[in-house]
Figure 1 (cartoon, rainbow, N blue to C red):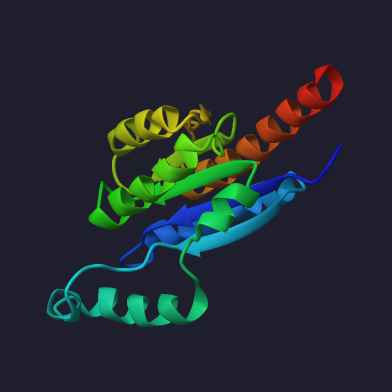
Figure 2: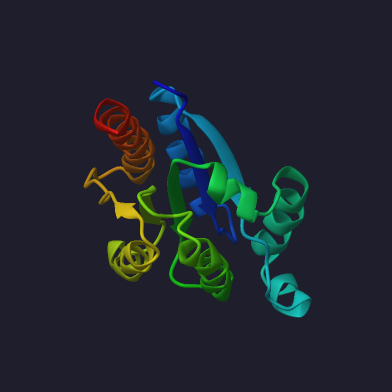
Length: 172
């Protein structure tokens, strides 16, 4: 079997969702997957960000530490993991950018999951959007600890991608 590639894309203002994305990435690595970790760039006005000191500090740090997701990342990936808190316009823009990949069939059969640092209800529209993009959606778990849940989710999505890859190789 070949390598499994997992793309973890997240949007985080104050670092909470970032911590969950890191945990999901660790879970994927524990399942022996290669990962790319990408941060959705801010579209908020600077004066809005300046009004929340923790947001401003995290933005400056994350701009140095992460690159934005590119189309090539989604094509490379066998599985997508998307993390957010709610439905910011950054996420809507990213999902819209994936639409071109869907129409060319490049997302068909990719494994995908989502997590939220907010309410678990935040994920329902994201799961629906991923399914509409042609992805096979893996639901999130229900661990009481959010970090552990994200780690297990990253591991689970990599394992499902590996299992699907094995089926395809055996049955073509």
